[in-house]
Length: 287
Length: 242
Image (tube, rainbow over the protein chains, first blue to last red):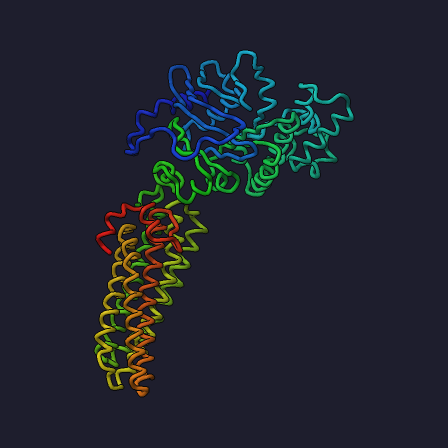
């Protein structure tokens, strides 16, 4: 995370005092933030950048094999919260995360928890495709080599192929596996990053605006891919496109100025949201 | 619920424009219904003819508003209350157009009946049913204009009365037909008018259901009205109305 975006988050974190401008009280989360047998779970989550609070008492469950979309205006804390889920915020020295966070009931912030192993189980795909300056093959094989997931070259070949197939990219790149990943188109690079995330056999995939740099066709391919991936993985996606949240997710969480305002079935959120702030945001009124 | 306050002022105007067009269409349909009934009750052939010739404007308005709704969906991708408005309007205008058709049917029977000898006492009975149906239509349009779901659900509870009136009028008409078979042709025409009045009331109830959906986001069609009242409304307000 760059310094400028940290500053942006800090600047936005100061805003909660002004939320009264909407004349709407935020008192806890409305809707259904909890599920039976969650894959991931957060209780009483607060996040601070130095002494500025960015997230206020978020309580949320993420169900197995669901796609949950997180929406909200810039600086609402949705990306910050996403990064709580695989301890990406650990990389920011001034960032402090509190509350209980679990993966399959296991405390992901426990002292004996290795963040590198956690990030293999909870993978992440970023807004801007960020392939390593290596070949397509090495990009996908990188995590598998790091975690020793393949015993020999042949196993690694199979893993790379399987991951590229799952990411819907294999047909397009099968003859160019040794060419640099950075030579692919934006949409292909993003699918390469998804293949790289899948290669280490994660349980959860976090996606932070994965298609905001892509054209509509590449976006449609990624969305189609997400739909297929949810059979095997749990996906949490942060998106600025409400249509995308409506298209791909089963549940939608609305964040506003660091508060988790509403979590409901996506169908409910987009036809009859419970909270006034959610309605204002998704209908384009002073969000 | 409110229509305005979008970041896009143009969006506000487009939604407001659709709503105004529906109100205008409602006004025209209401006035056509009033004139049709007046021509029936006062045996005014000229008035009946004026209603029969003026349905095109309602048809054109339906097509125009439908097109606005499609444009809105394609270009704005409305969500939540805005989406419900566009969807409800699409249904409301279909019902309004059908009310316009019923008015035309009444006017065409009025034209024929005006030339015939009056069937004893029938007009007084029809006058009562007409009054109820027109009041229901008026209140419905009023509820739409104010997006008043309370009034809309009250209209739904009142509609049972129309059905009672229609049934008792039907019994009376059957008696007239049994008494004198020479009456049958005209009494049948009156029956069709009564049937059209009942349809106007039923379409008004449909519109009221769309208003509740639009405001509350709850689809109450085909639901038990008592359950609807106890679940979504403060039903003490409605107990007095019944």
